[in-house]
Image (cartoon, rainbow, N blue to C red):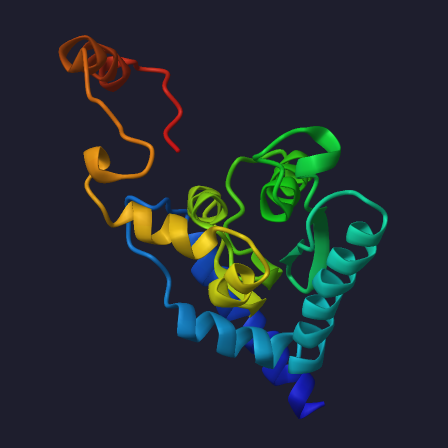
Length: 201
């Protein structure tokens, strides 16, 4: 009974924090260490391990079925899996169809919201830069991963290389970036800033 009361109390505090924090990346981030400790208290470490195993099983099963690369992801809200994603790059001819992206799209569609505030994502491998950016844009609270970018590189995936590319100046990257027509582009941003019915994200 005491443990149940502690879990309920922790959950109430967590939900109040989430309600008070309807924030985006432009504002302050919640304390991630507090978030993981609350998860362990509320849902239990065993549940968190099962979520990760679900991501790993998803990766191996869909890989064997020929869906794509060996990657799986699940998104969890309040202790429940609300979305699953596997890598579908080769089966859909879509280079953006990484497991995390697929799961984020499914979760957003299910919740009817482009923000996944308060949700966690479990991935069988550290996200690539594209997926990491998508996770930030979705305002996901916490990332849990199994293998890391070095493991991915050992298996032939370019995650580590792209992370290094990001640190270089645009003109010095393997795919050079050339800036042009900046003034015309800034006019679009000015119009956006003046748009009274805009939806910030």
